[in-house]
Image (cartoon, rainbow, N blue to C red; front, top):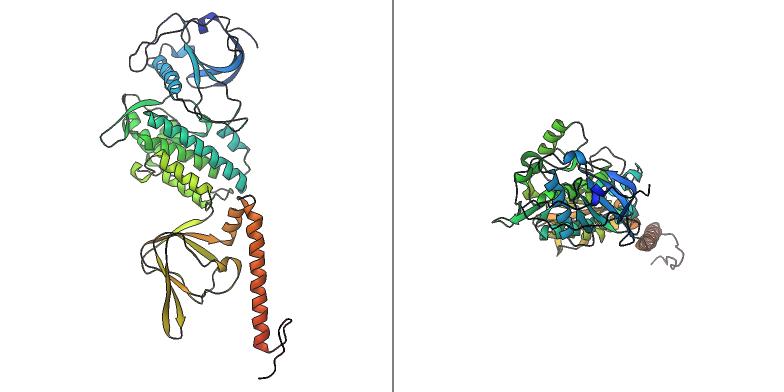
Length: 447
Protein backbone atom coordinates (compact mmCIF):
# COMPACT_ATOMS: atom_id res chain seq x y z
CA UNK A 1 0.00 0.00 0.00
CA UNK A 2 1.00 3.63 -0.02
CA UNK A 3 1.28 3.69 -3.82
CA UNK A 4 0.49 6.84 -5.79
CA UNK A 5 -2.61 6.51 -7.97
CA UNK A 6 -1.99 6.01 -11.68
CA UNK A 7 -2.05 9.18 -13.72
CA UNK A 8 -4.94 7.85 -15.82
CA UNK A 9 -7.10 7.65 -12.69
CA UNK A 10 -6.88 11.30 -11.77
CA UNK A 11 -5.56 13.14 -14.80
CA UNK A 12 -8.49 15.27 -15.94
CA UNK A 13 -8.54 15.65 -19.72
CA UNK A 14 -12.06 14.94 -20.95
CA UNK A 15 -15.31 16.75 -20.38
CA UNK A 16 -18.39 14.79 -19.33
CA UNK A 17 -22.08 15.48 -19.45
CA UNK A 18 -24.42 15.08 -16.50
CA UNK A 19 -27.78 13.28 -16.53
CA UNK A 20 -29.63 16.30 -17.91
CA UNK A 21 -27.02 17.25 -20.51
CA UNK A 22 -25.17 20.02 -18.66
CA UNK A 23 -21.41 20.11 -19.41
CA UNK A 24 -19.13 19.67 -16.40
CA UNK A 25 -16.09 21.84 -16.01
CA UNK A 26 -13.23 19.65 -14.86
CA UNK A 27 -10.41 20.49 -12.52
CA UNK A 28 -6.83 19.38 -13.00
CA UNK A 29 -5.69 17.67 -9.78
CA UNK A 30 -2.00 17.00 -9.39
CA UNK A 31 -0.97 13.47 -10.29
CA UNK A 32 0.82 13.24 -6.93
CA UNK A 33 -2.09 14.57 -4.90
CA UNK A 34 -3.77 11.28 -3.93
CA UNK A 35 -2.03 8.33 -2.33
CA UNK A 36 -3.97 5.06 -2.16
CA UNK A 37 -3.92 3.30 1.22
CA UNK A 38 -6.30 0.39 0.72
CA UNK A 39 -9.56 -0.73 -0.89
CA UNK A 40 -12.46 -0.18 1.53
CA UNK A 41 -15.26 -1.77 -0.48
CA UNK A 42 -16.21 -2.94 -3.93
CA UNK A 43 -19.74 -2.57 -5.29
CA UNK A 44 -21.60 -3.09 -8.51
CA UNK A 45 -20.59 0.27 -9.97
CA UNK A 46 -17.21 1.04 -8.46
CA UNK A 47 -14.61 0.56 -5.77
CA UNK A 48 -14.14 2.70 -2.67
CA UNK A 49 -10.51 3.49 -1.85
CA UNK A 50 -9.03 4.85 1.36
CA UNK A 51 -6.89 7.68 -0.03
CA UNK A 52 -4.57 10.27 1.49
CA UNK A 53 -5.03 13.76 -0.01
CA UNK A 54 -1.58 15.40 0.15
CA UNK A 55 -2.93 18.80 -0.84
CA UNK A 56 -5.47 18.96 2.02
CA UNK A 57 -3.41 16.67 4.30
CA UNK A 58 -6.30 14.38 5.19
CA UNK A 59 -7.64 10.93 4.47
CA UNK A 60 -10.64 10.76 2.15
CA UNK A 61 -12.66 8.11 0.34
CA UNK A 62 -12.35 7.91 -3.44
CA UNK A 63 -14.97 6.11 -5.50
CA UNK A 64 -13.66 4.88 -8.85
CA UNK A 65 -15.91 3.55 -11.61
CA UNK A 66 -15.11 -0.01 -12.68
CA UNK A 67 -13.20 0.24 -16.00
CA UNK A 68 -15.34 -2.45 -17.61
CA UNK A 69 -18.43 -0.23 -17.20
CA UNK A 70 -17.05 2.61 -19.32
CA UNK A 71 -18.40 1.07 -22.53
CA UNK A 72 -21.87 0.42 -21.16
CA UNK A 73 -24.47 3.02 -22.17
CA UNK A 74 -25.47 5.31 -19.36
CA UNK A 75 -23.04 4.05 -16.71
CA UNK A 76 -20.75 7.09 -16.91
CA UNK A 77 -23.76 9.42 -16.70
CA UNK A 78 -25.08 7.48 -13.71
CA UNK A 79 -21.72 7.70 -11.95
CA UNK A 80 -21.44 11.44 -12.58
CA UNK A 81 -25.04 11.97 -11.47
CA UNK A 82 -24.33 10.22 -8.17
CA UNK A 83 -21.40 12.55 -7.47
CA UNK A 84 -23.38 15.66 -8.40
CA UNK A 85 -26.54 14.75 -6.49
CA UNK A 86 -24.60 13.83 -3.35
CA UNK A 87 -22.54 17.03 -3.55
CA UNK A 88 -25.70 19.12 -3.80
CA UNK A 89 -27.25 17.61 -0.67
CA UNK A 90 -25.56 19.65 2.03
CA UNK A 91 -26.82 17.95 5.18
CA UNK A 92 -25.09 16.71 8.38
CA UNK A 93 -26.33 13.15 7.76
CA UNK A 94 -25.37 12.91 4.09
CA UNK A 95 -21.74 12.17 3.30
CA UNK A 96 -20.13 15.26 1.68
CA UNK A 97 -18.45 15.08 -1.73
CA UNK A 98 -15.25 17.15 -2.11
CA UNK A 99 -14.04 16.74 -5.68
CA UNK A 100 -14.60 14.90 -8.95
CA UNK A 101 -12.56 14.14 -12.02
CA UNK A 102 -12.44 12.09 -15.19
CA UNK A 103 -9.39 11.18 -17.16
CA UNK A 104 -8.96 8.86 -20.11
CA UNK A 105 -10.09 6.11 -17.70
CA UNK A 106 -11.78 5.68 -15.23
CA UNK A 107 -13.74 8.57 -13.59
CA UNK A 108 -13.67 9.16 -9.83
CA UNK A 109 -14.97 11.39 -7.08
CA UNK A 110 -13.71 12.08 -3.57
CA UNK A 111 -15.83 12.25 -0.43
CA UNK A 112 -15.52 12.19 3.34
CA UNK A 113 -14.01 8.97 4.67
CA UNK A 114 -16.41 7.66 7.31
CA UNK A 115 -14.78 5.71 10.11
CA UNK A 116 -17.40 3.39 11.52
CA UNK A 117 -19.76 0.55 10.69
CA UNK A 118 -22.82 0.12 8.52
CA UNK A 119 -26.15 -0.78 10.08
CA UNK A 120 -25.81 -4.15 8.33
CA UNK A 121 -22.60 -4.81 10.26
CA UNK A 122 -24.19 -3.63 13.50
CA UNK A 123 -27.24 -5.85 12.95
CA UNK A 124 -25.01 -8.90 12.59
CA UNK A 125 -23.59 -8.21 16.06
CA UNK A 126 -27.02 -8.32 17.71
CA UNK A 127 -27.84 -11.49 19.60
CA UNK A 128 -30.71 -13.74 18.58
CA UNK A 129 -32.47 -13.11 21.90
CA UNK A 130 -34.69 -10.25 23.08
CA UNK A 131 -33.64 -6.77 22.00
CA UNK A 132 -32.23 -4.77 24.95
CA UNK A 133 -34.01 -1.50 25.66
CA UNK A 134 -30.76 0.47 25.26
CA UNK A 135 -30.16 -1.02 21.80
CA UNK A 136 -33.69 -0.14 20.71
CA UNK A 137 -33.33 3.44 21.94
CA UNK A 138 -29.99 3.93 20.16
CA UNK A 139 -31.35 2.44 16.95
CA UNK A 140 -34.39 4.74 16.98
CA UNK A 141 -32.08 7.74 17.42
CA UNK A 142 -30.09 6.61 14.37
CA UNK A 143 -33.26 6.17 12.32
CA UNK A 144 -34.50 9.64 13.25
CA UNK A 145 -31.29 11.08 11.77
CA UNK A 146 -31.66 8.89 8.69
CA UNK A 147 -35.22 10.16 8.24
CA UNK A 148 -33.97 13.72 8.57
CA UNK A 149 -31.44 13.19 5.78
CA UNK A 150 -33.95 11.52 3.45
CA UNK A 151 -36.58 14.19 4.17
CA UNK A 152 -33.99 16.85 3.31
CA UNK A 153 -33.21 15.10 0.02
CA UNK A 154 -36.91 15.03 -0.79
CA UNK A 155 -37.16 18.75 -0.08
CA UNK A 156 -34.45 19.19 -2.72
CA UNK A 157 -36.29 17.04 -5.24
CA UNK A 158 -34.20 13.87 -4.89
CA UNK A 159 -35.29 10.26 -4.23
CA UNK A 160 -32.71 7.78 -2.91
CA UNK A 161 -34.50 4.53 -3.92
CA UNK A 162 -31.91 2.16 -2.43
CA UNK A 163 -32.31 2.59 1.31
CA UNK A 164 -31.05 -0.46 3.21
CA UNK A 165 -28.86 -1.24 6.25
CA UNK A 166 -25.73 -1.50 4.06
CA UNK A 167 -26.14 2.14 2.98
CA UNK A 168 -26.41 3.64 6.47
CA UNK A 169 -23.08 4.32 8.21
CA UNK A 170 -22.67 5.07 11.90
CA UNK A 171 -19.38 6.80 12.65
CA UNK A 172 -17.02 6.12 15.49
CA UNK A 173 -18.41 9.09 17.43
CA UNK A 174 -22.09 8.54 16.69
CA UNK A 175 -22.24 10.36 13.34
CA UNK A 176 -24.90 8.97 10.99
CA UNK A 177 -24.61 9.12 7.20
CA UNK A 178 -26.90 8.03 4.39
CA UNK A 179 -24.56 6.65 1.73
CA UNK A 180 -24.60 5.41 -1.87
CA UNK A 181 -26.81 7.71 -3.90
CA UNK A 182 -25.91 5.74 -7.03
CA UNK A 183 -29.47 5.25 -8.27
CA UNK A 184 -30.89 8.46 -6.81
CA UNK A 185 -33.05 10.44 -9.22
CA UNK A 186 -33.90 14.09 -9.63
CA UNK A 187 -37.62 14.78 -9.46
CA UNK A 188 -40.29 17.40 -10.00
CA UNK A 189 -43.57 17.80 -8.13
CA UNK A 190 -46.68 16.61 -9.97
CA UNK A 191 -50.15 18.15 -9.68
CA UNK A 192 -50.72 16.26 -6.42
CA UNK A 193 -47.43 17.51 -4.94
CA UNK A 194 -45.71 14.12 -5.29
CA UNK A 195 -42.10 13.74 -6.38
CA UNK A 196 -41.85 12.15 -9.83
CA UNK A 197 -38.54 11.37 -11.59
CA UNK A 198 -37.55 13.77 -14.34
CA UNK A 199 -36.25 10.82 -16.35
CA UNK A 200 -38.60 7.85 -15.85
CA UNK A 201 -37.10 5.82 -18.69
CA UNK A 202 -34.50 4.13 -16.50
CA UNK A 203 -35.00 0.41 -15.97
CA UNK A 204 -35.39 -1.47 -12.72
CA UNK A 205 -32.67 -0.58 -10.23
CA UNK A 206 -32.27 -1.05 -6.51
CA UNK A 207 -32.14 -3.93 -4.03
CA UNK A 208 -35.10 -6.29 -4.32
CA UNK A 209 -34.98 -7.37 -0.66
CA UNK A 210 -35.92 -3.82 0.41
CA UNK A 211 -37.70 -2.55 -2.70
CA UNK A 212 -41.17 -0.99 -2.68
CA UNK A 213 -43.78 -2.94 -4.70
CA UNK A 214 -44.39 -0.08 -7.15
CA UNK A 215 -40.66 0.20 -7.81
CA UNK A 216 -40.47 -3.55 -8.46
CA UNK A 217 -43.48 -3.47 -10.80
CA UNK A 218 -42.93 -0.27 -12.76
CA UNK A 219 -39.39 0.90 -12.13
CA UNK A 220 -38.90 4.67 -12.10
CA UNK A 221 -42.40 5.24 -13.51
CA UNK A 222 -44.06 4.16 -10.30
CA UNK A 223 -41.98 5.77 -7.56
CA UNK A 224 -42.43 8.81 -5.36
CA UNK A 225 -41.29 9.77 -1.84
CA UNK A 226 -43.36 6.95 -0.33
CA UNK A 227 -41.05 4.47 -2.08
CA UNK A 228 -38.26 5.76 0.19
CA UNK A 229 -40.65 5.46 3.15
CA UNK A 230 -40.92 1.77 2.26
CA UNK A 231 -37.11 1.43 2.26
CA UNK A 232 -36.93 2.98 5.72
CA UNK A 233 -39.54 0.50 6.88
CA UNK A 234 -37.38 -2.31 5.51
CA UNK A 235 -34.47 -1.16 7.67
CA UNK A 236 -36.73 -1.15 10.75
CA UNK A 237 -37.96 -4.61 9.80
CA UNK A 238 -34.47 -6.12 9.63
CA UNK A 239 -33.57 -4.64 13.00
CA UNK A 240 -36.71 -6.13 14.56
CA UNK A 241 -36.51 -9.59 12.99
CA UNK A 242 -32.87 -10.14 12.03
CA UNK A 243 -33.79 -10.57 8.37
CA UNK A 244 -34.77 -8.31 5.45
CA UNK A 245 -38.39 -8.10 4.29
CA UNK A 246 -37.53 -10.64 1.58
CA UNK A 247 -34.87 -13.31 1.83
CA UNK A 248 -32.97 -13.44 -1.50
CA UNK A 249 -33.81 -16.59 -3.47
CA UNK A 250 -33.29 -15.54 -7.07
CA UNK A 251 -33.91 -12.37 -9.05
CA UNK A 252 -37.11 -13.48 -10.79
CA UNK A 253 -38.69 -14.97 -7.66
CA UNK A 254 -37.64 -11.99 -5.55
CA UNK A 255 -39.11 -9.62 -8.13
CA UNK A 256 -42.50 -11.35 -7.96
CA UNK A 257 -42.45 -11.45 -4.15
CA UNK A 258 -41.42 -7.80 -3.88
CA UNK A 259 -44.25 -6.79 -6.23
CA UNK A 260 -46.76 -8.88 -4.23
CA UNK A 261 -45.38 -7.45 -0.96
CA UNK A 262 -46.02 -10.49 1.23
CA UNK A 263 -44.31 -9.36 4.44
CA UNK A 264 -44.90 -11.13 7.75
CA UNK A 265 -45.57 -8.86 10.73
CA UNK A 266 -42.48 -8.74 13.01
CA UNK A 267 -44.69 -9.78 15.93
CA UNK A 268 -45.56 -12.96 14.02
CA UNK A 269 -42.10 -13.55 12.58
CA UNK A 270 -40.27 -16.67 13.85
CA UNK A 271 -37.70 -14.71 15.82
CA UNK A 272 -36.51 -14.65 19.42
CA UNK A 273 -35.98 -10.87 19.41
CA UNK A 274 -39.39 -10.03 20.91
CA UNK A 275 -39.75 -6.75 19.01
CA UNK A 276 -41.58 -3.79 20.57
CA UNK A 277 -45.16 -3.67 19.21
CA UNK A 278 -44.98 0.09 18.65
CA UNK A 279 -41.87 -0.09 16.46
CA UNK A 280 -43.29 -3.12 14.64
CA UNK A 281 -46.44 -1.13 13.84
CA UNK A 282 -44.35 1.71 12.36
CA UNK A 283 -42.40 -0.74 10.20
CA UNK A 284 -45.54 -2.41 8.87
CA UNK A 285 -47.27 0.88 8.08
CA UNK A 286 -44.16 2.11 6.26
CA UNK A 287 -44.14 -1.11 4.20
CA UNK A 288 -47.84 -1.18 3.34
CA UNK A 289 -48.46 -2.57 -0.15
CA UNK A 290 -50.41 0.47 -1.34
CA UNK A 291 -48.49 3.76 -1.08
CA UNK A 292 -51.64 5.56 0.13
CA UNK A 293 -51.63 3.36 3.25
CA UNK A 294 -48.06 4.28 4.18
CA UNK A 295 -46.90 7.44 5.92
CA UNK A 296 -47.61 10.28 3.53
CA UNK A 297 -43.98 11.42 3.80
CA UNK A 298 -40.76 10.79 5.71
CA UNK A 299 -41.36 13.70 8.08
CA UNK A 300 -44.56 12.05 9.34
CA UNK A 301 -42.73 8.76 9.90
CA UNK A 302 -39.94 10.60 11.68
CA UNK A 303 -42.50 12.17 14.01
CA UNK A 304 -43.83 8.70 14.90
CA UNK A 305 -40.31 7.53 15.77
CA UNK A 306 -39.72 10.61 17.92
CA UNK A 307 -42.97 10.00 19.77
CA UNK A 308 -42.00 6.36 20.31
CA UNK A 309 -38.67 7.44 21.73
CA UNK A 310 -40.56 9.33 24.41
CA UNK A 311 -42.20 6.07 25.50
CA UNK A 312 -44.93 3.54 24.77
CA UNK A 313 -43.15 1.37 22.23
CA UNK A 314 -43.77 -1.84 24.16
CA UNK A 315 -47.54 -1.37 24.36
CA UNK A 316 -49.77 -3.02 21.78
CA UNK A 317 -52.51 -0.98 20.14
CA UNK A 318 -56.13 -2.16 20.15
CA UNK A 319 -59.26 -0.73 18.60
CA UNK A 320 -62.80 -0.92 20.00
CA UNK A 321 -66.16 -0.22 18.40
CA UNK A 322 -68.90 1.89 20.00
CA UNK A 323 -70.60 -0.12 22.74
CA UNK A 324 -67.69 -2.52 23.31
CA UNK A 325 -67.13 -3.32 26.99
CA UNK A 326 -63.38 -2.89 27.42
CA UNK A 327 -63.33 -3.92 31.08
CA UNK A 328 -66.21 -5.28 33.16
CA UNK A 329 -66.77 -4.65 36.85
CA UNK A 330 -66.05 -7.68 39.01
CA UNK A 331 -63.92 -9.52 36.46
CA UNK A 332 -60.27 -10.30 37.20
CA UNK A 333 -57.88 -8.08 35.27
CA UNK A 334 -54.17 -7.90 34.51
CA UNK A 335 -53.97 -5.05 31.99
CA UNK A 336 -54.36 -1.28 31.90
CA UNK A 337 -55.33 0.91 28.95
CA UNK A 338 -54.19 4.31 27.69
CA UNK A 339 -56.70 5.98 25.38
CA UNK A 340 -55.10 7.46 22.28
CA UNK A 341 -58.30 8.16 20.29
CA UNK A 342 -62.00 8.26 21.22
CA UNK A 343 -64.03 8.37 24.44
CA UNK A 344 -65.21 5.89 27.09
CA UNK A 345 -67.85 5.96 29.81
CA UNK A 346 -67.09 4.58 33.28
CA UNK A 347 -69.92 2.84 35.16
CA UNK A 348 -70.30 1.24 38.59
CA UNK A 349 -73.17 -0.84 39.92
CA UNK A 350 -75.09 0.30 42.99
CA UNK A 351 -77.41 -2.55 43.80
CA UNK A 352 -79.51 -3.06 40.68
CA UNK A 353 -78.64 0.34 39.25
CA UNK A 354 -75.82 1.23 36.88
CA UNK A 355 -74.33 4.56 37.93
CA UNK A 356 -72.43 6.67 35.38
CA UNK A 357 -69.24 7.95 37.03
CA UNK A 358 -67.53 9.94 34.31
CA UNK A 359 -66.44 10.14 30.67
CA UNK A 360 -62.74 9.75 29.79
CA UNK A 361 -60.86 10.50 26.59
CA UNK A 362 -57.51 10.81 24.87
CA UNK A 363 -54.52 10.57 27.19
CA UNK A 364 -56.46 9.12 30.14
CA UNK A 365 -55.65 5.79 31.78
CA UNK A 366 -57.90 3.16 33.32
CA UNK A 367 -57.36 -0.25 34.88
CA UNK A 368 -53.91 0.70 36.17
CA UNK A 369 -54.23 -1.07 39.54
CA UNK A 370 -54.67 -4.39 37.72
CA UNK A 371 -51.02 -4.29 36.62
CA UNK A 372 -49.81 -4.29 40.20
CA UNK A 373 -52.44 -6.34 42.03
CA UNK A 374 -54.47 -9.43 41.31
CA UNK A 375 -57.77 -7.86 42.31
CA UNK A 376 -60.99 -7.60 40.34
CA UNK A 377 -62.17 -4.65 38.28
CA UNK A 378 -63.87 -2.02 40.42
CA UNK A 379 -65.86 -0.50 37.52
CA UNK A 380 -66.84 -1.09 33.90
CA UNK A 381 -65.48 0.92 30.97
CA UNK A 382 -67.46 1.06 27.71
CA UNK A 383 -66.43 2.61 24.39
CA UNK A 384 -68.63 5.58 23.42
CA UNK A 385 -67.28 5.92 19.88
CA UNK A 386 -64.43 4.27 18.01
CA UNK A 387 -61.66 3.95 20.56
CA UNK A 388 -57.97 3.25 20.08
CA UNK A 389 -56.00 2.34 23.19
CA UNK A 390 -52.56 1.12 24.16
CA UNK A 391 -52.70 -2.11 26.15
CA UNK A 392 -50.35 -2.08 29.15
CA UNK A 393 -49.45 -5.43 30.68
CA UNK A 394 -47.07 -5.91 33.59
CA UNK A 395 -44.51 -7.52 31.27
CA UNK A 396 -44.75 -4.71 28.72
CA UNK A 397 -44.46 -2.09 31.46
CA UNK A 398 -41.30 -3.76 32.80
CA UNK A 399 -39.76 -3.77 29.31
CA UNK A 400 -40.76 -0.15 28.82
CA UNK A 401 -39.29 1.14 32.05
CA UNK A 402 -36.13 -0.91 31.58
CA UNK A 403 -35.44 1.23 28.50
CA UNK A 404 -36.04 4.49 30.37
CA UNK A 405 -32.77 4.56 32.35
CA UNK A 406 -33.25 6.27 35.73
CA UNK A 407 -37.05 6.10 35.41
CA UNK A 408 -37.06 2.31 35.73
CA UNK A 409 -35.82 2.07 39.34
CA UNK A 410 -38.14 4.91 40.38
CA UNK A 411 -41.26 3.29 38.91
CA UNK A 412 -40.33 -0.10 40.35
CA UNK A 413 -39.83 1.43 43.81
CA UNK A 414 -43.21 3.18 43.63
CA UNK A 415 -44.86 -0.02 42.42
CA UNK A 416 -43.33 -1.98 45.32
CA UNK A 417 -44.67 0.58 47.82
CA UNK A 418 -48.11 0.41 46.17
CA UNK A 419 -48.17 -3.39 46.39
CA UNK A 420 -47.09 -3.30 50.03
CA UNK A 421 -49.84 -0.82 50.85
CA UNK A 422 -52.41 -2.90 49.00
CA UNK A 423 -51.36 -6.09 50.81
CA UNK A 424 -51.57 -4.26 54.15
CA UNK A 425 -55.07 -3.04 53.27
CA UNK A 426 -56.12 -6.63 52.50
CA UNK A 427 -54.69 -7.87 55.82
CA UNK A 428 -56.47 -5.14 57.73
CA UNK A 429 -59.76 -5.92 56.07
CA UNK A 430 -59.32 -9.64 56.70
CA UNK A 431 -58.54 -8.97 60.39
CA UNK A 432 -61.66 -6.85 60.79
CA UNK A 433 -63.85 -9.45 59.06
CA UNK A 434 -62.83 -12.31 61.41
CA UNK A 435 -62.86 -10.15 64.54
CA UNK A 436 -59.18 -10.53 65.37
CA UNK A 437 -56.93 -7.86 66.75
CA UNK A 438 -54.66 -6.26 64.18
CA UNK A 439 -51.56 -4.47 65.36
CA UNK A 440 -52.16 -0.74 65.45
CA UNK A 441 -55.96 -1.08 65.81
CA UNK A 442 -58.04 -0.98 69.01
CA UNK A 443 -59.53 -4.26 70.24
CA UNK A 444 -63.16 -4.95 69.47
CA UNK A 445 -65.24 -3.75 72.42
CA UNK A 446 -68.22 -5.91 71.42
CA UNK A 447 -70.39 -2.83 70.78
